[in-house]
Amino acid sequence: MAMPPFEKLRALRAFRAQHANFFDTLEDHHLIGEIGFHQAKGTPLTLKEVFLLDIGSISTVQRRLRKLKERGLVAHTPAAGDRRAVELTLSPKCVEIFANYDVLMSSNSAARPAARRSGEPKHVCGLCDTDEGGRSLLVDFLAKGLKRGDRCVLIAPAELHAGVLSALHRRQKAPEQIVVTEGNRTANAQFAFFARLLQEAKRAGQGICLAANMAWTSSKNLRIDAMLDIETRLDAIAGKHPFSALCVYDARRFSSGEFLRAVKRHRDHARHPVLLG
Image 1 (cartoon, one colour):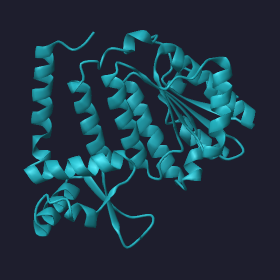
Image 2 (image 1 turned 180 degrees about the vertical axis):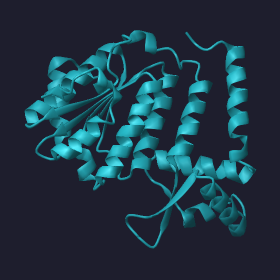
Image 3 (image 1 turned 60 degrees about the vertical axis):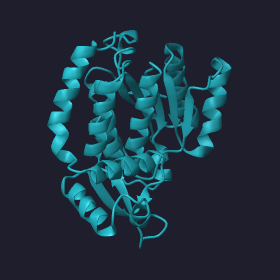
Image 4 (image 1 turned 60 degrees about the horizontal axis):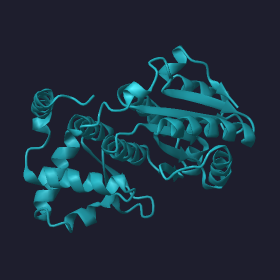
């Protein structure tokens, strides 16, 4: 059941009042929009590219970016391909603000939760020590998501994609709502990817079912702290949206200490056991 229109208006007014001081000028709105758009595509803007957008003079853009950075909304990081260049991304704080705004704007924001049992886990870990065991966990989880009509997402190193999709196809035909990706090279870019998926799923009145082989993080050279940051933010998403996620850890790739730290980022494991494959 969608949020009644006048209740939505009140919620939007309160939201805008809470965050009004974040964006003082029209240039701020343009900068946030362009930086967020390119971040969600996985191609963050460089500082040089921002200057070419004709948002304002170079001095104006520099001043507004400095203010946005001071407010914790925009981050500057060296570009992976050229350490002399600087890439601009929205901070997790900023991405979460707009994700919450999208929930308020979406007329389908409450369309899917009723399809899930209240006691069903939404963010859990799996542990395997063989390729077959890990694949089985991912396939079982995605098959349940497809049965619910969720937008399903597989995140794994490229060499594991074919095996999971082939096994899933043998159980049931895999429709177009399966999104397959190798993951992004930064935690911020990955979170922006999740935010975009949520927006698309909400517009379609769907939930999201995410199955990840966490070896993707090492294939993208993500450090353990970045991986745990992603897990923490996934747990927050799962607590607020029609979103379920399984994160499979291979004991041959992750130490017991790393796995235990990851488990602690999954609040559902207070009530549900770790899945074994």
